[in-house]
Length: 375
Ligand code: MAN
Image (cartoon, rainbow, N blue to C red; front, side, top):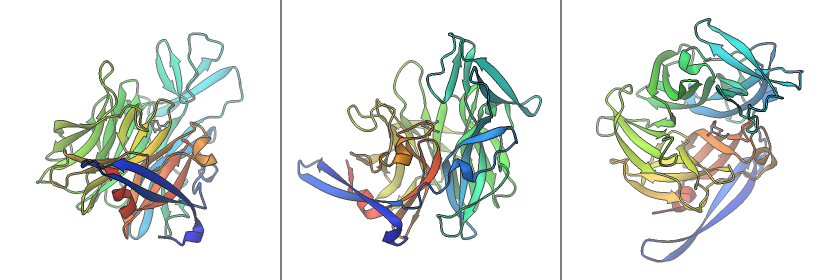
């Protein structure tokens, strides 16, 4: 943990009633880095001269050769000097190049109300295209960012970009699982690497609509496990499921874990965030929840260590909610969203996307986080 002078404190108190009816209250101290945001769009070089970076956020996190590695989601868009039109960059898998599509802002049949989307009668486009970029750091706060993408869209199911990577280290191999977006839908894909230099593509592991996948970092009862979030267009909400696999490629035995809770911070949808990690009390997962006002917060859920399909306890209040200016204002405000953390010396070192614009850093103690959970 860094010195307390380098952090901005904030305390969240949670009052709860235990299963036995007893009242209890607990405190979670949140230490946001005073250097926040630690990475901003200005720190990143666009992948081509006619593009601008609009966001660097939702990074996968791991340690490699002593360094903290971030695999950044970099969102960029074509520079546009014409206020009459909107542009969308689309990767053409057949041509193996990125093309730019133009939409008239005067077209009343096109919905531009969500800053992330261009919704036409013929289909939906994204206002930015994302790729994944490596950044390395010795101290976990100051990062050296590579000038070129590490992983870019390269397939038909990635034509609108690749987003929100998570990194899971399993038996010496780093597995990167990320969201691929295209007119075919939203899928989750797998890439492996041993050195963050050469990357091996394994293709789609969860088909549309499915995102927010988080691979457990070790086998349980000789099987791989993953949290995932399928979406039903007709029934149900966006809820977290668990799947198991013998080989990381074929997934089955799907079990529903938990969903949104009416009237709470995660009332509209939930999705896995960081890769779960082992604690003495069970697997701890930091997940995101959205409320009716599109506010994204982070909370925790504890899963049984040998039977991860058993949910043991969950945050009543968000462990972490958007409050600072850089979390409340940006490309898509009121968002804290994490794809990765390091649990070191009983401290959760959380890297999170703020307002879909920048990367920030905060610490929570493991002890306080576990105490704040209620069955
Ligand atoms: C979705 C994803 C995330 C994003 C949030 C908030 O869940 O696209 O990448 O951070 O929305 O916009």
